[in-house]
Image 1 (cartoon, helix red, strand yellow):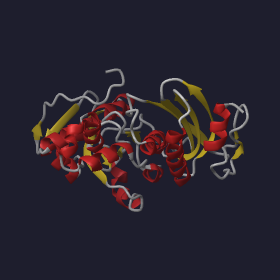
Image 2 (image 1 turned 120 degrees about the vertical axis):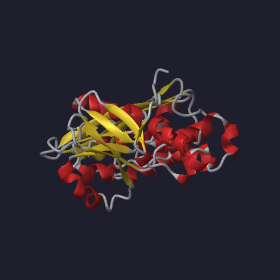
Image 3 (image 1 turned 45 degrees about the horizontal axis):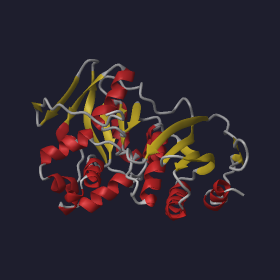
Length: 321
């Protein structure tokens, strides 16, 4: 067998138990899966490129976690239950010292969320990873971006801004001397997909999105699709003590919370009549949830801090800048 097929057999085949809905997995021209009656398949694809989404010398286990977690987060944003993943790996040369920890971490996270690798590809070229994840959700309940209405409350999960601080450390090693630099770098890579939160929001939230390009960039996707506006109380943004100490200024920490990409937390909207049910619905999901503002009429988008309007000029992550 060629080197390619040796790598596939050694690192990707037979690593997981077969899901009952997988009829034929890796090893043929296509995988065959069976969709339960009444459910639809939610599908998302993401690519991570060395030098853009991670440095070539980054810990391969962390890269694996980031790659799969970021894709699972898309499923969480729709309330879908993870089921299957396909993975295309491009690398300059076979590198088993890199692949071994990468695959160990990849399958550990996949098994945790009950997601099975069902196929993919390997090819030679600059290091990049492309994953297509698929999950299951009742189509009439799926969380979308176009359901927010005026008066709905805006929530986010977790703490925001840590990932941006971690990226600062990755790009400037002189920052390693700052407080909590190593912890923030790790948080950049090791996000937690909010799958349980997404599932708990089914029937309660009116719209949702995961925060991959920064809240300041991702919330407007909901506003545009729903044809509404928003008012954000910046003082309500959840920031960690570690971030505040790292940047040394609470206001700067809030700006990080607005602009930090690759958080993979959820932003969602909840109608007034469902607001009281949110706390109990999310009580066992293991995620902090913060109400940060309210949906307003279309054309409105304002930030305010302790009642004072802000004119901060901020932007999130742009893949082509």
